[in-house]
Amino acid sequence: MVKLEEVSADQYEQVEVFSEEEDDYSDFSDEDDFDDEDESLLDRIAALKDIIPLKHRNRMSNSVSTLSSWGKTGATFVGKSAWVITTSMFLLVLPLALEIEKEQALVAYEKEAMQQQGTQQMLNSANPYGQPAGQQQQQQQQVRAPGF
Image (cartoon, rainbow, N blue to C red; front, side, top):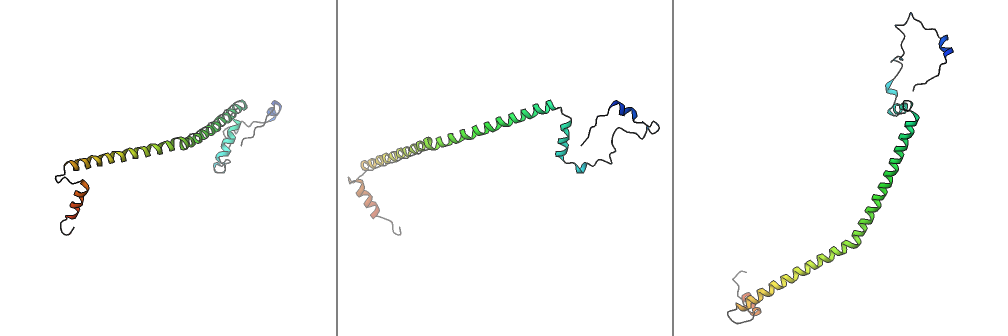
């Protein structure tokens, strides 16, 4: 971290500047004194605090807290809405879907029964012996090829 100290004009005049060693003098610290490996990313971000003015930091902090508050409110609303929609679907739409499926099965069963009646009528009209269809089927079952 950088430590800043205010130097008054009186103290500045007392400091002697060596003009002879001007080549060796530098405003920057020696790079050997600073070790990058000991400083973490969090330390570097904390050091940025000194660069950004207080007014801007407060504005950014308020913006972030407002944004997080809106995010939490939005997530809560979405979660509760999803709960209401799914429970409504289970209570209202699922029984309706089951009844529609039962009705479709009943319609298919009735169609199949009508087809069987039509087949029975065709068999009765095409019966050459004048026997009912049930007796004709019994005769066909009695006459079988050997081995079956």
